[in-house]
Length: 114
Image (cartoon, rainbow, N blue to C red; front, side):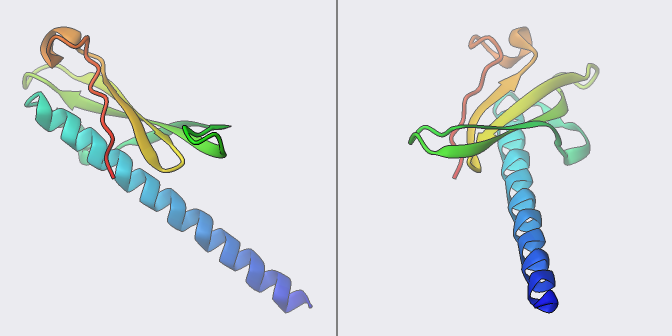
């Protein structure tokens, strides 16, 4: 019985680790695409998860919402911050902090990346 619980615990830990890895990869891809769309460089080629919470998905089901932040360089000299919001593993929004350099949309580059 003890071995069964250990196996179930390890399986659950693996599933959580795999889901987190997949979500982070989606956030990196969204940040890369947003930076590419404004001819900016994604610094360090990574994102950092800063928040997660339970929320309702667009379909009305309970889902985990994650917020990732990243740094980018729009002009080769300045460092700006951006964020990627994912709900249930899907990109809901990408927000860039530099409205003047990011175009006329106020720095917001909403993306739905699958």
